[in-house]
Each structure stands twice: as C-alpha cells, then as structure tokens.
Length: 597
Image (cartoon, rainbow, N blue to C red; front, side, top):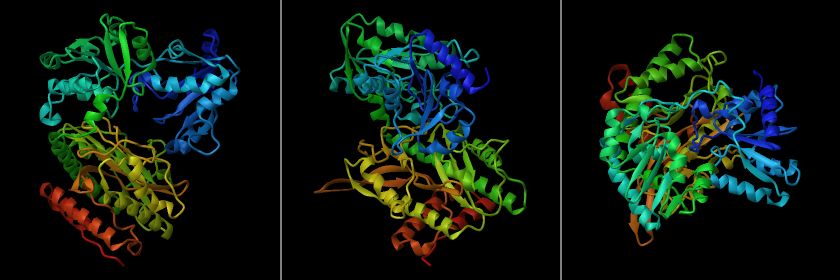
C-alpha cells in the first residue's frame, strides 16, 4: 500500500465497516503533543504531508488537509499527485474542517475519530458545530488494522533531571500542586502532557526527536501520586528517586483502569484542552468522580522559571552562543575558500559544534538552514537529495537550537552571504526594527501577548506586509522548545509574569524570493514599581551577534541603533571569556558598534 490514495481507499473501507461517513485524522498523540513519536504520525502516513501541524479529513467522496501559514508552500508540494485538497487555515473564505464537515455531510450522519487523538475541548466544540445538522460523533480507532508496519511506542531510558538544574525536587513540586488543588477545592488532578509530567516528576528521556520527554501520564491526589509509564525502561536509580519522593509507578496502559477504579468520591481537576477525549469520558462516566474543568496547574507553574532555572538557562545560552561562534568561523572560511557548502552541511556542522559543549543533549528541533527562496517556507527542512548549495550572495536563514541539562535554546539569524538587493536590505531592516521594538517594550503587569504582539508587527504592517505566525512562544527548561502558557500572538490572553521566557522572532517571507527572521529568547524582568503599578520589561538571554551587513542604517532610529550596540556589547561580555584565537577575533569584529549613515 504505497500511495496516499490507496491508503485513503483503505481508510474509507474501515469507515464503511464502522458506520461512519467521515473521519478526522489530526496531528496528535494521546498527550496532545506538538512533536509526535513515529507511532502516532498517522496524519503524515495517510496524507504524505510531513509538517508538524495539520488535520486530515476524509469523507466517502472527498478529502482535505487543513494547515496553517507556516506550511502552505510545503503542503502544496507534498500533496501533489494525491486526491487531497489543501485548505489554508485562517485565510479569508476558507472553511474550518468542522464547517467543511457540517456542509458536506447529510443530517444524522456520523463523524469518526480516535478518542485519544482529540482533546475533550475540541470534541465539545465539534458537537456544538454539528448540532444544527444533528451530526453524530463516534470515538473509534479506524487506523490500527491499516497501518500494519506502525512503529512501536518509544521506550528510551528514563533518568532524573537533578534539582541542581530544576530548582526543586519532585516532592517539592508535588507539594506545590497540592497547594494549588486546595485553592481549587479539588482532590486530585490528571496530567497528560509529556512536558508537564516530565517537569512534575523531574524525569527526562529521549522518546521524541528533539524533545527530552517520556511517554507517560501522572495523577496527583492530596495524599498520593502516580506515574504511568513503561516500567521496563525506567532506570533503577530513577525508580528509587520516584519512590523516595512519594510517587507510585504503574504501567503506561493502566491509566484507563486507574480512572475506572476510583471508588471513593473525589473531585478531579481536568484541563479539557489538554486531556484526550477518551480519558475525559472515563472520568465523566465514573459515578464517584466529579469532574472540575480548569487549567493545568503544572503549565502555569512551569511557565514561570525559578531562580535556579534562570541561572542555568543563561548558562545554556552562553554555551550555545560559543558553539555558534565556532561554527561561523569554520563556515565563513569554507565559503571564502570556495568549498562546496550546502544547507545540509550547515545542519551537520551546527550539530557537531553544539555536541562539543558540556552537558549538550542534542538539538532542540531540526535545524532550518534555508538559502534564499527556501527561507520563504517558515519551517523548511533541507534534505540531502534536494538541499541547495550556498553561494557568496543572498541570504542564509538559520533557525536552530540545543538541548542542555541547563536549558533549551532557540535562535534564528539571517546571514548576508554576499550582494543583496535594495528590497532585501529594506526587508532585513524592517524585521530588525520589529525585533527591537518588542525587545525594548516596557509594559504594565497584566499585559498579555495579545496586547504586546502589535508592537513588533506594526513595523512590517506599515509597509503592507505581515507574517502568518505568532511573534514568539514560550520555551521549556530542558524540555519542549515550544511551551506555554505564554506566547506572543494577537489571540493570546495569558498575562506575562516575572520569570517567564518568550521568543522574539518577527519575519518577512516572500514566496520565491527570500525569508528573513531574527530571533532571541527574552526573560521577563521587573522594570519599576510606582503609583501606576508594577512595570515589566524584557531582557535578552540569547547571546550571538546580529549580522549588520544587511542593515540600512538610514531607516533606523538612534534609539534602535543604541539598542543594537548595547546588545552586541552584552554578547561580547557573555561570550568572550570562553573564546580565544580566531573565534575571539570574529566575535570582536561582529560586535563593533555601528552608526547611522
């Protein structure tokens, strides 16, 4: 069964056998993860589209794939030759997949989906959308009998992330959760997100590419705590640590039975946005359980980094910056000498230089090394058979990051490899101005990403340009590179707090021409407290020079240039103590102050 269309035909056969007229295949696993183990990449298997976000919908006669602006170009290429129609999300006139289903299906027909692959909240929203046509829903796994060579659930070794990095022991974190449960008048809470379980239990693994997480669930009560995981892969010292911290370890598959076997009356806090539909329904159907809907308490706690975490995260960024300096010296020398350098060469070199740093645990995501027009695809991933060879002209966009025991990094720089056009210089400067506008922001406590995003975006809006993504996202602590609850986009309503981290990454993406992005991670810190309230500001904690070769200084204000020069002074102070020779000279050259033309 090689082709996408053949797989869709097999899926339709399963739909018919199970009495459903449409099937939803999301980009999801039972833990509502962003990056999926191969075992749960069903949407990719059935559609051929490999992007990290998207939903496949199949009816008896049609099929469509919904994805966001990051993947419009990629999805269009990868869907060629299949029957699947691309639906560009958030574009005027394009229906959502629930609107599509409500329009295409007849009254009373049934929509099927795997109940562990959709959140309880998304299913409830779907019910509301389907109510007028009385469409039914059915939780059923239509995939298991088709995907016969499906990869196993990952089972890498599970180890402890020491409190010298995390700041608190597992026991101390459990007590924090119990304090929050008291405030919410709840007896317990179920945790399904892998980053939340990892943070709470102080465990890490290598189950998902780029994400040091373990496939697992957790349950916390006022008097006990449970971790549901494949116990065969938990190191003995990790089992001892968990037991010492008051955690009972059970098998991963026992989570369903554990929820069914709650035989004393309990109020369980559940986040319907992050708990899958099947688990939610097991709780709802248990007569001893009162389900109390609310936000995941771990998400709120881990979003604010403690002092130990902040100290370690800054150390991780210093290591990362030095690795990038070493890479740049080698890379520029290769280009100068006329050696063949491809986008894939860049990815390999970055991996190599990061790996040399103490406590490096790999990359935090697949490096985006995108030359010229390739960078217009925001999540472009170079492949050996198709990657571009670099020349001494145009732009090279590099978006990369590392995982360290001390923290997670994420940085983007757009490098000028040689002559560029006036338009390219203008766009490069607009992006830098957008980055600086956000970096310089001062705002009252209580402001959200939805309030502040516009400070950056207006710098490109004024030129009739926009970027189809958020301006920034939260970052985990030796965890996922994308972690909330905070993010920088117009729709976000989470207030920034001291200790949160957020990326600052505006961009301009011109299909067929170029892509430009400049990204730092910033720490939320206090500015001033007065009669108007507590003011906050951002402090950059990514340390690496911004290429000044593409800047039209006449378009910059004196204040913007002052920020840039001050930032480069900070980069020099942070990185220079660990460098010498050619690397130190390179850093000195790239952090020299510039003036308005």
